[in-house]
Image (cartoon, rainbow, N blue to C red; front, side, top):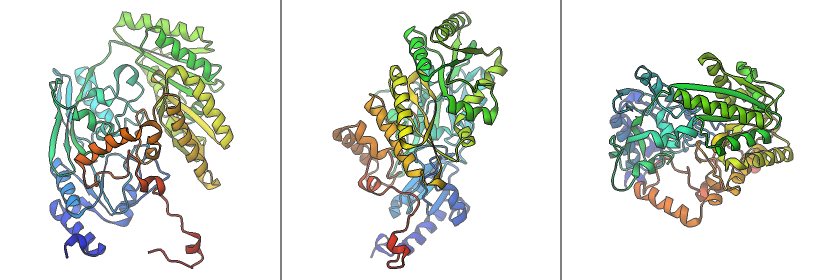
Amino acid sequence: MTLLESDPATRHKVFLETLRAYLRPEAVITDPTALRTYECDGLTGFRVVPTAVVLADSTDDVRRAVAACREFAVPYVARGAGTGLSGGAMPTADGIVISLQRMRRITGIDAENLSARVQPGVTNVDISKAAAPFGLHFAPDPSSQQVCTVGGNVAENSGGAHCLKYGFTVHHVLEVEVVLPDGSAVRLGGVNREQVGFDLLAAVIGSEGTLGIVTEVVVRLVRNPATVHTLCADFPSITAASEAVTRIIAAGIVPAAIEMMDALAIEASEAAVGAGYSLDTAAALIVENDGPAAESFVEFLAVEQICRDSAATKIRIAQDATERAIIWRGRKAAFAAVGRISPDYIVQDGVVPRTRLGEILQRIADMADEAGLRVANVFHAGDGNLHPLVLYSEAEGQLHRAEELSREIAELCVEMNGSLSGEHGIGTDKACSMPRMFSESDLEAMWRLRQALDPEGLCNPGKLLPTPRLCGEKPGIYVPHPLEVTGDIERF
């Protein structure tokens, strides 16, 4: 009898011993209380406690952990700061977590070639801080950039407020080192930016950790703009604000950012940070233009006039960097601030053509009324990337309704010629909705790529692509069977 054919308890014991031998005893966490820290990411409604957690310090640590998992057929998931919002870092009950939080070194800034070499546990904002003395910054700026890691940015192809002009993570990654499911480490892409052959780098970015674990990233840096102009405009309705967005882009102006917040989001943000937003407005647009002084100023004047022509009731123009930071603080705090007005909430993520913003926001409002729930909206209006926040109370039994509404909103985006996700990923949250966006042959092509690299299916299983188990039995909080409650059956 082989070890894999032995009883589960023996196999698990030997696996943990092997992990400790391959790494270091202190690098393997098995304490049940400590493991609870890793049971979910930012999608907190569903939780699974892993059997162990590996605290990796290096690429070699990751390789050894993956090799052990392959040897014992144990599934694994890579995890950074755990700020993801789609369940992409949720473990499986029989698997382990490979934490990259300790891999947080910036190993080089190449100012001449506008790049930085970093480990995956480096926070998004720390790259910009390290590049600041050279007049450079890392353009992707998720709202969680103070804590989210670049490894997670690569996994989800994160964007942020300024992705309208500067693009997503995929536009700012030159090279990655990735540990494949066979335990080998390979480099994809290159710092010279011109590559031949298959673009496997692009395949890894946004693959949500299903093709391998990224252990080093060379990111592209951009020069700080010469000037920045920012305004916050109030509108009497979401429709009016949406029309202003369309008119700005139609005028040939591409601001660095165009963000929208509705009344509920403003209420929450003001309660949390007091950024000076109007509490009596239906919607607010934050528009920022940057670039060469003359060009940026002319475009900013045009944006201001378009807002006035679109029925803006008030326009607040940042007079200096401090006031600009205050305006952005209110926007960046909005997700977390919603906890001020609701005990629980789900952050959804989808994309629609920006010309249909007013239409979908009205439909979302109607769907929320029908479900008896509230939805706050704060999102990247410039590229139609919605972030509806479905507010609910688990204590009042509203979780199921909230999940259904959240799923329906995501699928509505597809119905309106959009996408299930703009930057938060699919994870476990929307894997079962993938057939709404992709044909059977599309999904089969994705499966073939995944199986070519991970034939055993151990690398972040149950994520991104639909599987019968995932869609038939969603993992999460265990609910006892009625016969178990009465004592007629037992759970083993």
